[in-house]
Each structure stands twice: as structure tokens, then as C-alpha cells.
Length: 400
Image (tube, rainbow, N blue to C red; front, side):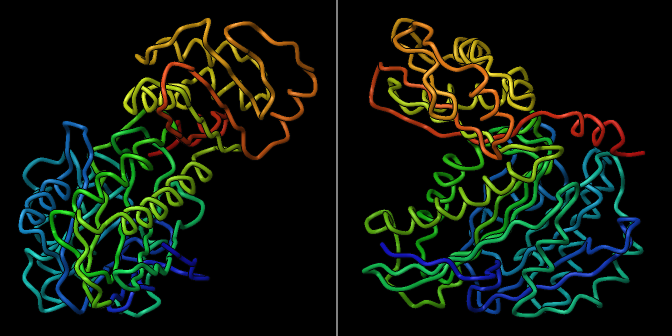
């Protein structure tokens, strides 16, 4: 498989897709807060949703609409999660789908709905009704969509790649938002992806789940999840390639993994109050499940995150997190590296220049933690960020 990055690419860089956004008045500032993504052709659709048992009305509605495995449009708003507001939330989510469907002249069942923002706050539907006619769909409108999804994000997250395989050429693209309430099994995360590849519906869902598992489900900012999280993937088939299924889908899977991983790392880099990206690589695990458990536990540990923020080479916090991860860990086999400096070998502390490592941690934009369990052949990578005073400030003032 060969793929190339599309410069300035976004979710509408895929042929057949358009998008647009407006300021509907949900947010007090004059910022985009309502957007629509649309395919002029019918799409095979797939979705992955929050594992939180409290689910927003848009999540419940979209789960129902996705049972048919088709969709033509996604409508999204920011500033209000439409969660925990009772029956009114369900009515408002359904109206969001209906207003989008009427605008695009498609069935409302082909519209997926997503909302993000404050929980327990009803949508201002009178303002939204007035805003829908003002949404203008354009081929480069993905950039507006990416901004309309943002809450505490400081910048949009977008990517588009062109892929060439023996099954044919196609494009995969995506936009995502998220900066806090972020933990494996999805978090305060919205991600919308598009492709013009011709896809088997069952394989598209399987492929999306696998890609989410190695990317967004390996991402932790603050060990929180929300009722609103969802990842959607729409495939309109305009590439006219040989249908991709489990029999010939390896290249597509690799490309989708690449897109999701890029977006996941972009979220970690833009996390609330973050000053450093943390990447944790665990190798030598007995199986994939334990490798992921270990990596995710380390990257989400508050004491690890605060040590990294302060440039403190206190590697004992890594060992402590690893020991409670549930992975099969034997102290006498452990090798641990911080920014490529070995601090433990076969369970024995190694001599290193404390000041040199402190400076390395304090000045780096990215900190690498590498753990070798020496018990098997499985590996996993997780991403997160440091925990700063600014994170506390942002979340102590979120609704005030």
C-alpha cells in the first residue's frame, strides 16, 4: 500500500462530500457551532459509540439510525451536549435530524446526529431552526465543520490521505474534536471520517472498530468519559474500486489506522492545559490485551502525568502504575526507558545523569516512555499528555 498526505486536507477532500457551518447562537462568542456534512451519493455507514452507560440523546438516535448501515449526512453542534435533559433531548435530537433531512431532501433516517458541550442543558431549538437555512454546503466546507465541533479545543484536527492499492485508488479523510474528558473506550470525542472506497458494510464496521481500538481507545487525557462520544465513517463508493471486504481489506485497514492515529495524537497534543505529548510504548507483553492495559494505565496515571509536567524523572511512578494495570508484570524482567534513557534494567535501577534527564523532560514537547516486560511478543502504544495547573483552571471554570 502507498498513501500520500493531501496538503490542507479535510473531511470533504473526499470526492462527493460537502459541508458547511454557521454560528447558531449556542455559544456566546461569534463562533461556528452548527455544521452539516453531506454526501451527494448514498453511503455505507459505520459507527462506534461511548461505553458510558449514560448516553446522550444524539448517541441513542444515531445508534438507531445506523442499524440500517446507511447514512447520507451528519449534523453536529457544539456548546450543548443534549444529554441528561429527559424526553426533550430525544425530541430535539429527532428534530435536528428532521431539519437536516428537509434541507437536503433525504430521509431523516439517513442523518446521524452528534452534540458536544455542557451536560444538562437543553438545546436552544428556536435559534437552531433559524440557523439551518443559513448553512451553505461547499466542497471545502470541512474546515468550517472542524471548527464548529470544537469546545475547549484550541485548533481543529483534520487529515486526508490518498491511498493506492491493487484494489484501486481511494481517499480517506477525517475531522475530530476533543481536549478533555478523554479516556479509552472513547471520551469527549467526536470524529467523522469519509472515504470514496467501495466497501462491504460488515467489513467497514469491523475495520472502524479495529482502527478505534488502536487509536482513540489508546488515548487518555484525564481518565474521564462522556455521554456524547461517537466516531462515524461514511463510504460513498465513488472511487469505483473493487469492493473491499475482509478478504482484501488489509491495505484499507492500515490506511484507516493511520488516519485515526493521526487524529488521536492531535487530540492529545491539544489537550486542555497540555504542554507535552506523552507516548507510552509497551513491548514484550504476553498478549495484546495486556500490552494495551499496561500502556493505557501508565499514560492515564495522574502521578505520571504531573511528574512529566514538572520535568521530574520519578520513574517509580511508572512502575507503580504498571503494577496495578492488570498486566502480567514481573519486576525482575522489567526494562524502563524515559526519553531513551534506561532507568531500570531487569528490575534493577540503572545509574543515569539525573539533571540531564530532568532537562530533557522539562524542555521536550514530546516525552517517550518505553517499557519492556520481557514476557512475550505483544506490544501496544498509548498517547496522552501532562497534567497542568491550566487544566485545573479550565475545568474549574467550565460553566462559569
